[in-house]
View (cartoon, rainbow, N blue to C red):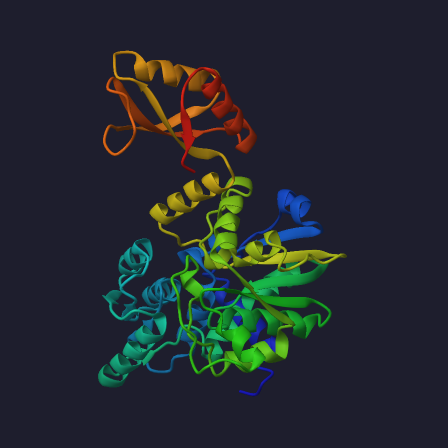
Length: 405
């Protein structure tokens, strides 16, 4: 394959064939994001795809191209590729085996098993799992399916870009997450082939951003991977096929941190009612943080590449963002250690229209009177100003209040 990649015709044919199984995911204009960021912001909701991510498109195309009848497939993946390959393999009547990192999402590994695949939780990274899958293919005769560095995979992922072109006639800019580069290079190739004027921006997580470093020419062979909520794009380096395509077709590559990604996940949940995993929220994170400016004229599309996130992690992110936004606060106070002491405090909080989420009694390690007990309250309010006013009111009522966070 040359640096220009597969033809648009190849991509369009693959998209048409996959459309029998893959959903045509919606493109949704976001009034709240448009107002906050400026310009017209449109969300491509691949988080609503079957299996929860764009990966199904590439998996379907790859399995159609396998010539060995009935041969099983094997892959290494953080979860989304594994789910999609398992789903496609079940559809085409092939066995499937996947290697996933030991820290992989519980919900993702459970979904892979639900689609009938065998799951091995081994190694620390996706790259190491890919190496294990290659070895399994060599020793068993199974067909190895790379999560991104494969011509058929790239061609299949281009379907996301084809749908955006059809659904957003005034498309001016498209923002796409970059991990290994299969989605980014496929989307960029499809979009630029039909409309070279569209600006394509790739987004990486700061915890693992090998593409930016490689494009600057100052990277080692592999990037170090730090823990990140964008685990779906935590790749040590892009592929040998995808990197040249990124260089050829993508206009800019930016980086966002986990703070911005977490905020984007919560904004999408609250305002757009969409559950989006960390990797899938990077495009919105780039807009909210100002790393990427919306197009002045025409629509800016952020691709929400996946929605497979553990409920526990989503809950933690939501609580953390509420605290960061000033809607939750931990307060330390002292009350008389007698019946009604706590009731008086809680009544005072309620009178100020705040909500008590948790109460913890503290009697050791703090400065208390003989007949006092310490309390740590987690309270919820409308925002910083509201909770600041609550603290002032409690102090005016005679309560000592120390603010922990």
